[in-house]
Image (cartoon, rainbow, N blue to C red):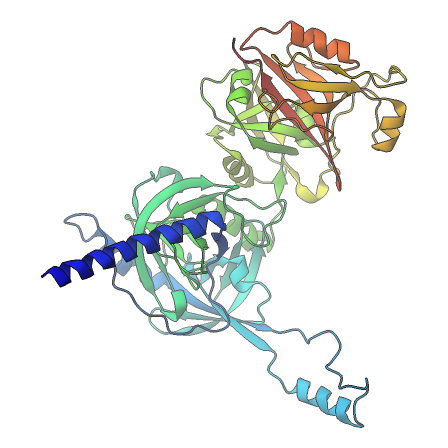
Length: 525
């Protein structure tokens, strides 16, 4: 008995230590990575480990849903023609090949297989064979083979694909195919049960269950090959998703698809508890564009935004932290034409609430180019609504670094560094001279360069010494350019503890520049 107890104790200690080490390595080395949930060229057999879990008590809901939707789920085998290798061949010592060797190698290489295959999933959305899947499942494929749950096989053709949302539509020929109805992810609450169906790791038509773990996952999910116009707005689920699940449906207990499984967060490339799905309302809007036009025209309002912090919410007059802050307004773009300014906090788009950047991206993408939509913003305690006519991304003017002050009055010939009281903002600034303007390739001489930021002041993490130039004061008072240190100091001296200061700032980088709206709050006494 003592020996048995000792063995159990040693096992318990070993398991505890192993778990602790795993946590340390995962967090300390940042081993969590986001990757596509698509199968690679080949899949080796995977050991199966029994797992337990809770299901809705006294209900066959999951079994009923699985039975109902599985016939409409498909397995997709995408075959791609590999490009011939570029680069020099291996050359023997001496730098030359024996006579005839080069021709032999060319003939040998021509005989090598030039095809690669990968597996994914999809689901049928119309009786005549339209299928939604992921762009990364079908991108570059020369042959698409679709297998249904009843083992029928079809050749499919690509109707269209959109890399910015990772949605693609393919089609098989036939009629009376089983389909899955569309749901609405907005009606889902965090914690509700969902079912994922797909073809992970070569295990066809696998059903897994879990819950909605989070909604509106955005910048936290950094997917491979996501570009500047990518819409990062995902449902997070703990239903097991693995390579091969890409493009399969995420389904609620009413048997409606609410998401398209796309990616996983994993240390190993396999399931680690976190999966991500494209919201179905977004996927459906993209699908309709692809079926109608074969491509998507990306609608934009011409702003760059960031998440709102407590100071931004306070300056905007919000009672809670919500919305997204406008950092930059594109010169000549739809937002500028409508009257939106940097520093505004967008709270709704077409009546739909905007809680974070990902929600704004998705709400805009639900509309079409040329459509006018109401955009509601908070500006220094006042709610304003602007009707913005969406333009196509490719038609938008080149983004200008910032709105430069119109006043070109001369500035002092030499910099005059002066410290703004550390108890208020904790920054040091200096005026810009013509020499500094020329050296930094600026278009205007007005503005104040930040030369120092106190480590424990309100500007810490918001302004960077040597990088940032204060162009305008946006609050309090009317928006106006900053011409001198004395002018900024006078405004700051008039602020009381708890008051806000709004600034329009130009940030200089090695590869360009970018404007941003900065909110500072004077610390309380």
